[in-house]
Length: 265
Image (cartoon, rainbow, N blue to C red; front, side, top):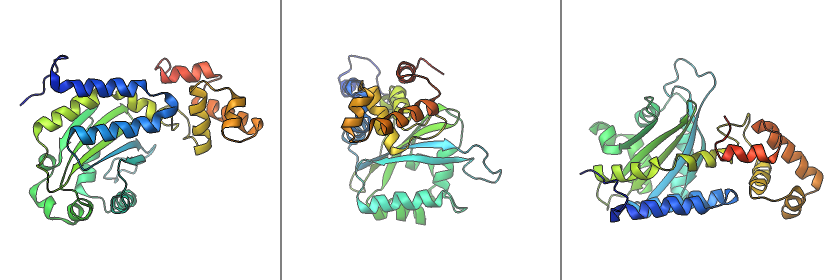
C-alpha cells in the first residue's frame, strides 16, 4: 500500500496541519515546537514513545571505529520515564566503548541523505533473541520501532525513533511511508533546532546561558531587555552576545537571523 501525496487526500490533512503548526512557533519556542512534533508523531502512529537525536561525526574517527565516527550530541525523549532515561543513558555510554550493538552499527551505516527503516525489516531474527533487544526494548515496555535518518550535511544527522509496545501491532510499511512523508517536509525544522544549540554552523556548541540569550535575540529582544529577563547585568548579556556572534562567525543580529532563514553558508 502506497501513501498518497495528493494535497486534498483527507489522510494527509493532519500532516499538513502539523507542518503549519510547527512553522507558527517562534524561534524562542523551539523546545516547545520539538515537544509538539514528537507528541504529534506519537498520536499519528499510535506509538508509545518517541526519541529525537542529533548525531555528529567526529573530526578524526579511528579506522577501527564501527560507528565510523558518528556519535550522539543531543537526545530528546518525549516521555523520559526513569526506565527509558536509564536505557538511553546506557546506550549512550556504550557508544563510546568497543561493545556496540549491531542495531547501532546499522543506524549509522550507508550514505543515504534520507532513510526510513522498520526494526523487524532491518535486523535478523536472531537479534530479537539477544540482550540488546531485551534490555532496551522489552524491559522498558517497547517491542517495535521505526527509525528515520535525515542528513543535514556531511557531518550532522537527525535520528528519530518511534516506539510501540507489545500490545500494539507491528509497524506496517504504510506506517513507515507515513512517517517518512511527514519527516521529509521538516528538514528546515531540524536545521533550526540544531542552530539553536550552536550545532550545524557554529564553531563550538553554545552554553546553556548563551542559548537562552540567542533565542531571546532571535525573538527580537534588545540586550537590555534580555538582561532584565534573565536577571543578569548588561555587561554579562553583552559578553554572551559577543560570544554567540563569534561562534556563528557573524557580526550583528541581522546576519545571525539570516542563518535561520538559510541565507548564509
